[in-house]
Length: 286
Image 1 (spheres, rainbow, N blue to C red):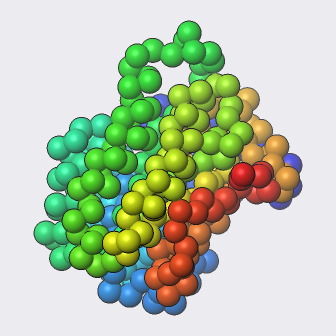
Image 2: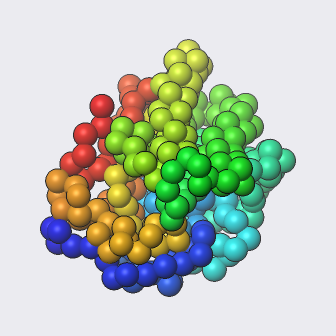
């Protein structure tokens, strides 16, 4: 599969899975669980599609009940994710929420605990980018606000609301960072800045919460084929997406999800905290 891009295609943000060519692999036919998250409850922001869907599926097949947030316009993708969680024999909970609103973030955590009974794992995955225009001068206030509120404010608000519940279970937090924190693209100035901030947040919060038995880590994906790409990248970028990695191709969401499972699993990652784990196709994460 080396040096393979994708057919030219475009969508409006946030993008839908069924309109992608090819449709991403979330592990529907490949992921096999081993009860590593049995009896756990996870909340995943942006779990309707892409990496979030792959993580939701993997967590469910590992024995966890899974709540996830999605935007109203992502209902079609959310319904599919609900079906995948149910097919794994676990309880799904789709929560319509715009994490740019603090009240929605608080409600997502409260609804998860009230409906599923507890909260053990928080995955801060929701993110926004836009790379169809270039340069700081071209960035509107609306774009900057959307990027920072989705990627950072939502993360802070969800984590703050989740902490009282995670303390009760010695739970863990896994954040979705990015290769952009290490190799920033000029067209993603705002997005890359938020991902660098997420790395700092991860290490800093791990130091704060370690004495309470709560682990905090992050995964830094490289170029992964998700709806965000055709919805936010120019056509020429989509056509060559991922071909600049040492492995010569983009990754699939199914190839990222196991990293989240490892970091969420107390038995396997009990002494792992404050770490950013790269899943980048060979791009360096340091």
